[in-house]
Length: 182
Image 1 (cartoon, rainbow, N blue to C red):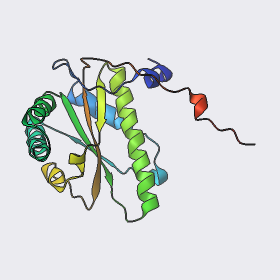
Image 2 (cartoon, helix red, strand yellow):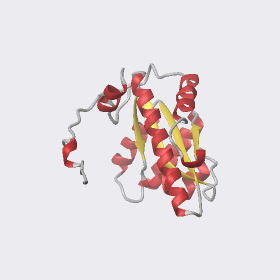
Image 3 (cartoon, one colour):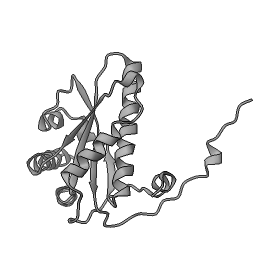
Image 4 (cartoon, rainbow, N blue to C red):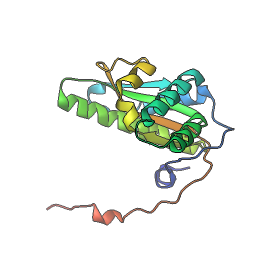
């Protein structure tokens, strides 16, 4: 697929089939290519955590406890069941920096790398979702994935797998966002 088609056709996927996911070696290859994203001073501020079943289960249990405070039991269990069936999980982090401008540049680089991953996954018939839910900002989440929150900041969970449903999307005309200056 050409790059224009990939960009326009990629969708955020919320439901996945539970078979035919790509191999771990393919995911590693996708990440290696994603790391060619632009990044100021070649800082390469990203880290990609490929989760196994044990860590996924731990995160799901943590989310169950986190949601139990303000959601119904049925809602919590539905989310637990859905999360446990997501085939692929990558946690993406960005190096922390006391320099706000440096962190902003590094975060932008990580976002570009995430987009590179999502486009490559789509090209292989895999959908994805970049999740930045409240759980990813909890210290217990950092502990669950063995990340030092003083050194790295979680920028999201990237879920992936073969799409069960591909949603339609409609975007505003780009002319609404283009400003030509003299």
